[in-house]
Image (cartoon, rainbow, N blue to C red; front, side, top):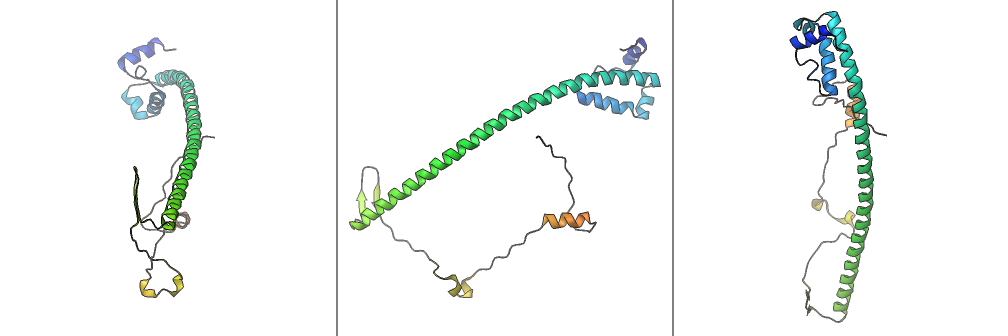
Length: 190
C-alpha cells in the first residue's frame, strides 16, 4: 500500500508509478531503483526505494499473470495456425498429385495423337480448337561421354566454405579473417 509519504514523493516525482503500463515498464523502473545515480537524482531514501520496490513487485505479479495469460492465448493461436498449416500442407500435396496426374494425362494424349498422325502420315491437321503440324528441330544426344574429345568438355569448379570447420576453428581460438561467431537465442516451443 502506498503511504502518505510515498504519495508526496509521487507528487514530487510524477510518472514513476502512473506511467507504468506494462511489464517492461515495471522491469525498467526496477532497474532504475538499482541505479545509485537515479536514487540520488530523485532524492530517494532507503525507505522510499523499499516502498516503491514493494509497489512494483505487486504490479509485477499482476503483469506476470497477464503475461502468462497472453502467452497462453498466443500459444493457442499458434496451435490453430499449425493445424491450418498442416491441413494446407496436406491439401497442397493432394493438389500437386492431381496436377502431376493431369500433366501425365496430357503427355499420354499428346503421344497418342503423335502416334496416330505419324501412322497415317498426316503432317498437318486443323480442328475447331487446334492446328496440328510438325516442325523440324535438332538436338545433340550423348551416346558415350567418355569418347567425347576434351576440347568440348567444360570443367566447372566450385568453392564451398565450410561453416562447421570455421566454427570449430574459432572455438579452438584460431584466427579466421572475415568471420565472427554470431550467438542468438532461439525460442523452442515443445
